[in-house]
Image (cartoon, rainbow, N blue to C red):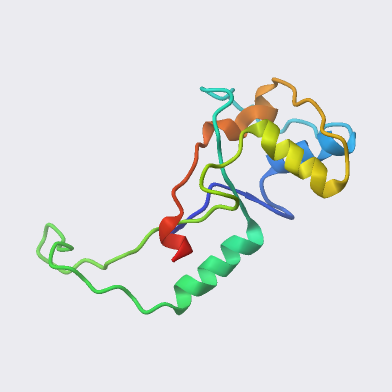
Amino acid sequence: VVRPPAVVGAGCDPRHEKLQRLVLGLPPLPETKARPPAERPGRRFRVACADDVAQVIARVVDRPPPPTHASAQRQDGGASEAYEAFNVASGGPQGYDLDDYVAALAAALGRPVPEVPEAPEMRNYEKQGVLDTTRAEE
């Protein structure tokens, strides 16, 4: 099981595109889905690049399956498959706050850092939190 947070890249999470448009000074995309505000604004988070997620999936597919453990018995007595889970995210283990993320995006695009509005559709990443990706990094 591969568990990325929000996946950014072409055709992925529209929140990243909204922030990129903000940095570029372009008008916002029309809102297609109402997003609730972050429960704890200012919370750190992580994202995953689509290419990184694809690489991890390829590596997981190429790994030998984990051994089935005796504790992996179903309630009916049959054997259960053993699964591994990998959290996948880009950036350091401390994650980003939204201002850090937008500043990095602006630097990558060679643009000044804009102020991020308090609108829920712009601050929704902050709901995610930071994933521990230690297993995926092995």
